[in-house]
Image (cartoon, rainbow, N blue to C red; front, side, top):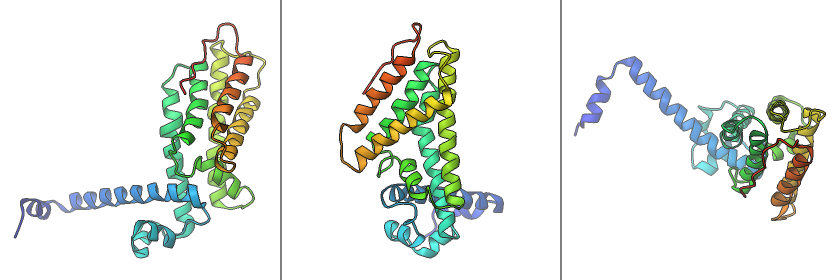
Length: 227
C-alpha cells in the first residue's frame, strides 16, 4: 500500500534526495561518534576499533566502514567529537560570561564540573587521552596535542583578559599560571578517577580559587563558587 510520504519521496528531485541521504548519513555518523567518545573515555582510544564499536552499537562492521575507513580515521574523528563536546560544555558557556575574573573562573569551574557530571562516561576524555598517547607519536597524538594547546591558550587568554580588566595583578605570567591551573585540575582528575577520592575535585576547586584570589587585585569582583 502506497503512503503519502513514500509518494512524496519518489517525487523529490534527485539533488533533494541526495541532500536527504547526506543529512541522514551525517546524523548517523554523529550518533556513532557520540558512542565512540564515551567508549574511548572508559576503555582508551587505542582500544577503540571498528569491531569493538560495532559490538557496542550492535551494528555491522561494514556499516561502520562506510563512515570510517580505518581505526585511525575512527580515532581522529572521535578526538574531534570529544573536542566539540568539550567546547559546548566548558568553553562556550564561559565565553558568555563577562571578560575578566568571571570568565576565568567559569572556565576553571566548568572544566571540573564536566568531570563531576560525567559529560564523558570515563571522566575527562582529554586527560585520559593525554596520558595514553603522550609517548605514541603519530596523527592521533598530534590531534590530542593540538586540542590541549588550544585549551591552554583559552586559559591563558582568560588570564590576560582578567589582567586587562584590572582583576589580576599585572606581574602574573598568563602562560605559566594557566599551566599551573591545568596541572592542578589534571591531578584532581587522577585522584578522582584512579584513587576514587570523591573530594578530589571539590578540594582542587578550592585550591584553584585560593590561587586566583591570592593574585587578584582590590578591584576584582568576588569569585562565586556555585558548587
